[in-house]
Length: 324
Image (cartoon, rainbow, N blue to C red):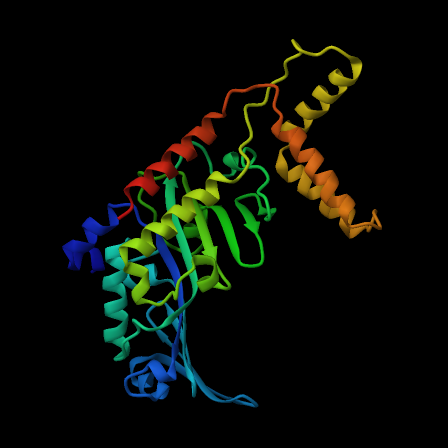
């Protein structure tokens, strides 16, 4: 029997706007009531032992979590949503995070509220009218991030401290054997991952207990919304010649239109190929060309915002407003 059927409160939780998924923790030895990390081994399954130059350690499983036990502390890596709920199709609300942490503490027989958060994924699933990949061409450049469409179904924006990912949740779930309700034929996952320097990025001592504090939770959701807003949105593809006065303007308009039809990924692909072949000795040239092409890409001859962009903006705005 699923957790949702066993506990009616979960059915209410999963109908709200859900946000937290993967949450990795580090429990320092000094923060453990017993003081010995290896005391949790009876709570784990599939235990393996390791001995190397760094000393003795053990690895085991606690639900979805991979637990690494060292002399100086415990590392937990996995999805808090999948640990607490049937799958990460549903992510965790603030109230569900509190319940999940309580359950994880009970199962490990150690209080993890003081555990340091070493990775935090903030996300939701968006039911869309069209296949998720159709939306990517209208999501353009993002300042201080590298845009990369690694596969047809996945779009990344990355820097050294966090990642933004858009991907086809139906295909990802199907590849892992997870059932999707028939009512949802197209699901787009939008995810913000804090992977390094979390305390500095969020200006807080981010512990397990901090995750379900109202002020902190609201701040993280606002950041999630702002990250999407700061992505360049491309407009409808069209070609208008009403304001063209010279041959140069006509050539630029034709080039801009063709560039828009190819999309942001075309620019990224060309520049990555140019870097691989070391075309320019001065690395600044790559940034300069990218900036000029992105400016041209954004300068659409049509001021009408795309239907797909409107759809995403409306849904993400509503999620940010109503997440609790």
